Amino acid sequence: MKRAVLCGIALGGIGLGLRRWLSSRRTRARAQREASRWLMVTVNRRPEEVVPDGRLPEPLARLGDTIEVQVREAPGDRGTELGARPLASVPSGVGEVLARLGGQDPRQAVRRALRESKCLIETGEVLRSEEQPLPPTPTGRIVDLTAQRAGGEGRL
Image (cartoon, rainbow, N blue to C red; front, side, top):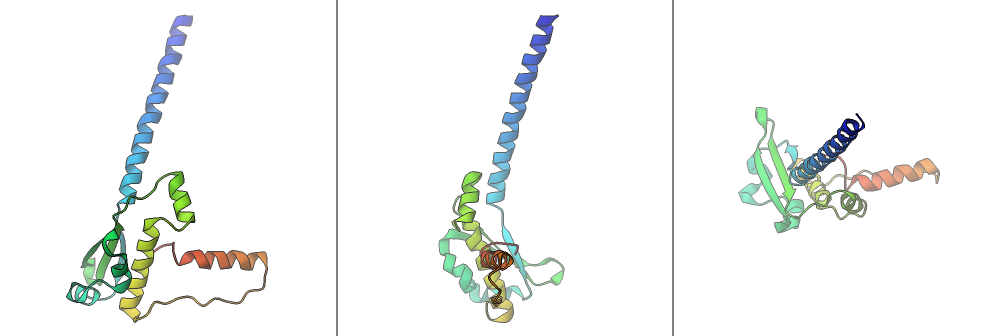
C-alpha cells in the first residue's frame, strides 16, 4: 500500500515537472511571436499620400534599416494602415522590463515613429501636449512623470 502511494506521488511530481517545462516552452514561443509582431496605426489618408513616391515619413525614415515597414489600404475604405516592426531582437523577461525602463526597447522607438508619422501626415506637424505648471505636490510629480513617459510608450 505504501509503495503504491509513493509511486503515485513520484508520478505526480514527474507530471508536474513536465507540465511546467511545457508551459515555459509555450511562454518563450509566445514572447518571440510578440516581439516580432507588427505595430500599426491607421492614417486618415490614401496610401499615395502616406508614402509619396515610395518615400517613408521622416520619423520612420530616421530608423532606416532597423525596421521593416508595411503600407496597405485600411479595411472599409478608412484610410491607410501604416505598420512597422523592429528587426533587432527584442529582450524578454527581466531584460525586457529593464530595457523598457531604460528606454532601450526597440519597440519604443517604433511606436514613437509611428505616432509622429501619423501626426505629420494628418496635420503637418507633430503635436505635443503643453506642460501644465503644477504646484510641487506628490500628485504633480506623478503627473509629470506620466506625461514624460507617454511620448516614448503607450498605445498607438
